[in-house]
Image 1: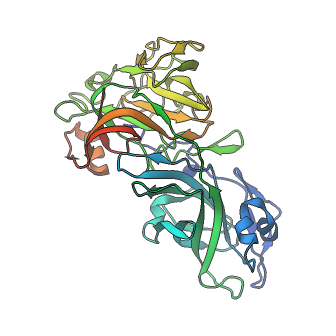
Image 2 (image 1 turned 120 degrees about the vertical axis):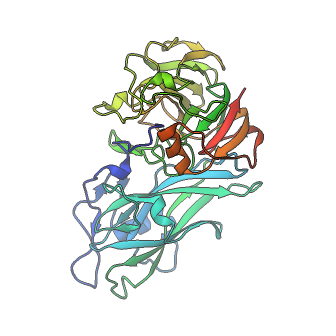
Image 3 (image 1 turned 90 degrees about the vertical axis):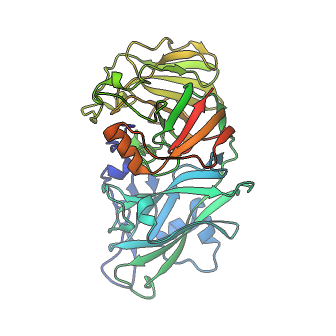
Length: 425
């Protein structure tokens, strides 16, 4: 359910060929390898990196030092207010171990203007980090390995977003070699500007009570983990995606046989346009999936199932995915108005039970684009499901499950977070 299984294209699960840099066999030097490209991140030798634009901070230091783990940011973060009262900066850092030995990241600190905004210690780091080709959490990069660090920098209520960020890593080599590779190395990597973009305000794509955010911001879910290598580069289209399912008045997800779409009372619910703007793409000929199992054999173009893509203006495109076959009432070129009914909620494509997948992106392709934050005009936050175990319980028994009602109430201009339960007017 909620497409909680691995996305086959998620970068955390794809083996990436090409090692950027390897250390020489001697202890006294580090030299570049002949192969200097991996995935979408372009790396150069240590000397060239120090003089490049992305490493300007290092170049301005009094002494240029070895940084065995190098990095860059996939997409600059856009500040977005959320239901926890905080403003979130949500983004990813690509990391590469440029040596011939294991390197373990013991700590990662996000800093702005000398202030520490987020610290991930040795215990927390593995849950936010993956090495390409390895599905299990880890903070250790093998020789030449690359991977990704997912970040969620949550600013206190009322705080002003910084203009830029930098990342301080504490790295431990498996075999230290003074003076080049001491036992502990502190690096500053991946400086990035914070976007001045304002998240688009949209209307909810569904109506009624009990809508559960089953896969939303800002944990490393199947959505955030699905950074896909497409057309020669990485794309994080699902960075802020939400899978919406609806709990009934008794808090149950389904009643009866969980392998029947009709057992989910919200199956067939109206899907509504989140804003004004033209339709740019429609797919409406894919079959429903059987609930309770993960689909296989899908083409990349079939992952969103039956879907609609709408141009909301100013570089924002909305995706409404996993719709019922034959239910879509709009065509490319149609001009939609906010709140207009466009389709029925279904279970098509890469889906293991009925739900609406909704996200906003910077291009019209459901996967080859970057996810952008959005906020809903108004809604009632009625509770939060307590913990991942409760989500698994919903899948197994249909519920009900424990919920918390702290910090509930009317919300305007905010992004719902993972496990939020909301009522949409």
